[in-house]
Image (tube, rainbow, N blue to C red; front, side, top):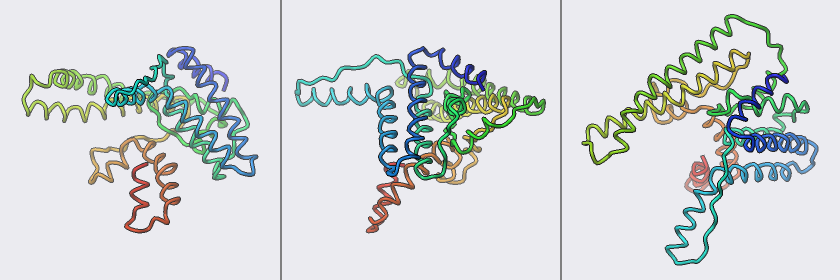
Length: 289
């Protein structure tokens, strides 16, 4: 367990010590909020604190500059002499996936679907597990966390299976995605130099470039986890074999879509279910989904 946590710490440290410290602080914070939620009579209050602060950190690192750039532009149009400063912050690796998992963990405790993890070593390993740092998946604590208590013995077939998955992911990323990217980047970078058919072809290639890039990373993450003896959420299920838009949504980035359904769409639709006239509660929920 210590060796695994050390591997994750070293992995995150390549992006900078500052980002590692932020993720470390968030790990400690969510460890204690989970315990606080369980012990509190009014579980909604500590949950609200946990969700708000986690989202605030995500907003600060990922959306602050974008949001206030637009606000400053709006103020300049109306000649308002207010300008918000831009922040020069290095975004911690995997901060989005980390925050989503932290919110899910705290919500599960509030719903009494998950008990807070008392073993900090297990808790830190779950949140900092390096194979899922860059691209996810957004695993549920009740599915992945218990696996850190299991004995991991050497298994030749498991390791070779994981290595094949890593090799397949590398092939999708380096051979398919990066090769298609050469053509796509050339066309997208010089739109006025190319005709309609080439623009359509670039758009077609970009779809497969995006899939091969994202799913390639995912295969490598799942492969590394398999080698270490862990089973993670499967994020893609042959999306281009879908028979409808709904079916495609269920096959693409599965861990994120199920997270959104479980923690956003379903709670909001239940909360607003009294808006029965014209099905407005569903529309309201879909806006969040």
